[in-house]
Image 1 (spheres, one colour):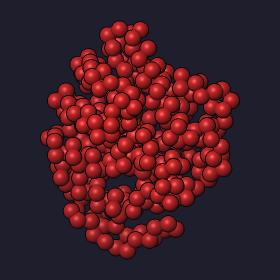
Image 2: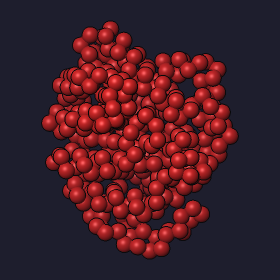
Image 3: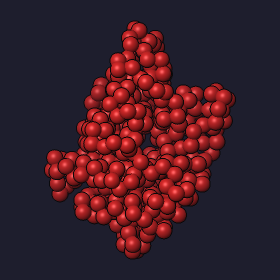
Length: 352
């Protein structure tokens, strides 16, 4: 099993943004020496939720500081970008790193982000599909040409040229059932960030795999799964700290995305999230926090390993990406968490 490490650069009430960056980069520098096989970054804008507005820039920095780890975007949010620029950036990073890029893409959920970029949120699904079609074709063909509703692109060469196929190393985040169908038709893998019941996810994956097989004439690739990790030799302490820090992270999710708001149900393409908002308002935000925490990976090393194995068996994941630093977790605690997971859980997963 492939094991990666993700940096999310979440703001802290105790440290300046500059201090957060230095601390998170120091942890990212540990990933390759500790034996992780990939480093991942996220893209978000305008709030203290996470502070990585350019995931490809972060991965390019890490490419120059490493020699063999793969470099994954989790994710590039396509509706916020000019697609030809994304194709250029991805091709350039792949050339710089010797072919180590894993291209993850998504369509975005934050109203504050869509508003900041002056992009109508109800156009996100259409923009995502057009951008993805243009970028994926460009990375295979070496040139970009497209005519759509939102993007009209004359023929232009990509330089540096992509030098190997991105098929099998391109993934997309999918939460709603409609998104899973789109990803199958695009021929990309599924990146799972746990936030819904596993039985629902499994049912949607079955549909996705069927469509993928029918459209692409091959089996869908194994899923990539991320998880928020708190690993401790003391199981009771692990649960206490997971409740505090993973729970604290999810409070920031709800605030950034305004998950309890009523705008999702009124926005085209986000009807599924409207149902999530209704559930949060019905059962209370703490129920949402507790649910999210229980989906994540916390406990003793043995418990963390067993939880990841359970996820693997449910969704056929052959890649697990660990998030070990988040919320207001002190940096020394984050490093201890990272090192313990690397020493005790990661080798068992990699031996599978």
